[in-house]
Length: 93
Image (tube, rainbow, N blue to C red; front, side):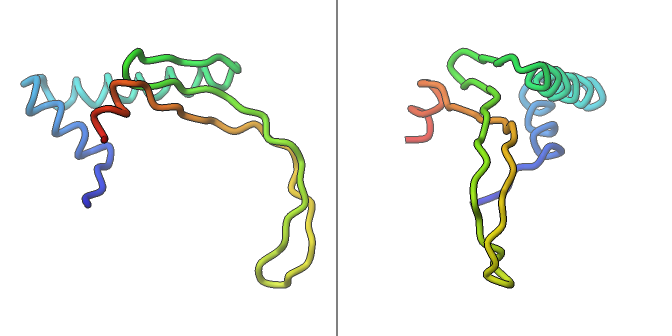
């Protein structure tokens, strides 16, 4: 199994589209920035067939420090979540 990072993804898009690497990097960076900004506002971003990015609220809970085994309180927080779309799920199966 191979890990595909942002640079590898850029090269894959360049190979498929024959666009300039600089342009692909700019577009990918812009997409990531836009998704991040919308999630920061509490909005959800749906890419039909691929999936949905959304914000979820996680309640405060009690945890355990693995080093000391002491009980600690983990504060409530807002976290990003991704739900895969039907087309992506089928492609992975």
